[in-house]
Length: 196
Image (cartoon, rainbow, N blue to C red; front, side, top):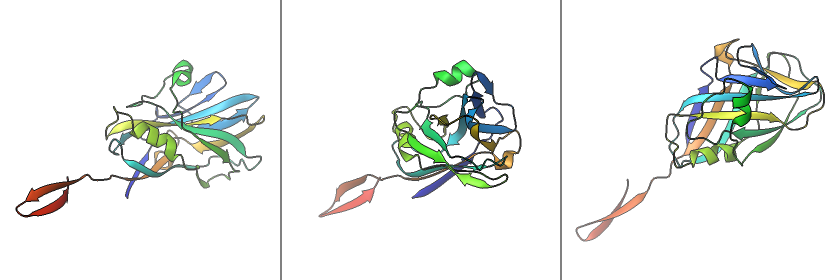
């Protein structure tokens, strides 16, 4: 098993959409509901060095909270963008047009305290759907989306963005396995298997 980790590495690669307002320049990335408007968050990770077709053992995101939001849990869905090499949106329409993976993880985000470190639920199936794409290759970019799924009014979470503090921007962690192909070559009287 191989461990891959990567933080958001550009101020344009994390964002949220509150109703019709797209924001990728603020101090926070939020998700949930504010003033009866759903909030969806997005995170793009470049140079994802996972080979096409690798087995994804587990996948999660980690954030640092930028606000005390300890109330009612939030209902969300975690998707990836179904693309060989995902490009970050620059406005509301581009965000809404992102093609989501059919695979997703339903995640109830618990309460957060300011400055605390928090992890998402595992979203292996969504990552696997992207890594299995024929056009995927190592070093391509992957986008993870946190979509609200019917959260009540004024219930949301606030994560530190890259623009606020690059060292505490969203962190992607994936464990994966590459299964080698065993080929049997006949050498003299015996058969010697080796990985290729």
